[in-house]
Length: 237
Image (cartoon, rainbow, N blue to C red; front, side):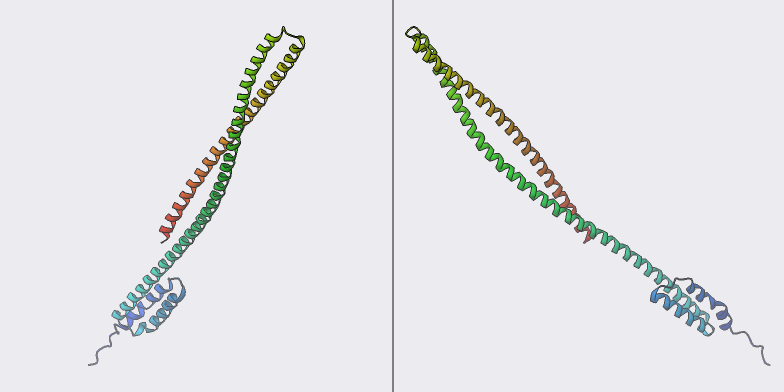
């Protein structure tokens, strides 16, 4: 007897399952050679679905899932690469900024150092002038003392000789007036020079303190910037 023909188990399930890989692959985004490979594989799988057994079809499905997973992994790695590239570019920009800042700070420090050197030279020169003026003041004070002594002697002599002659008394009075005028002029000159010297010394000391403070601040900022640059350089490696 002729037995009734049974449906081919490989054909019916394959026909029903064939849309699955196509639907799965079509849901992935078309991007580069990976998407082209998926489309090509889906087209080939659809055309061969009628010829595959269930086991072979499962292999195809597994390969499709694996390919999709690899595609997702590739996109993730690509995104990570772009993120790392952006971070590297940002780090490079910061590094360039810090290098430029360090150079500017070095230049400013050099200018400040030169300025401090000039001021120190000026102060040294002023010190020489002050020393000279101090010596001059001492001379004037000595001269004042001598003049006062001489004045005292002259006054005593005048008193002693006042009874001798009127002419001699007149001459001595004139000498006394002259000596007093010299003493007054010397005192005025000494006081004027002393005030000028005191003001100049105070001004020079204030300038020196200000410049030393600015120089210390610039040196500290330079060290911090260099340390930051070294830290950024170490991280970039």
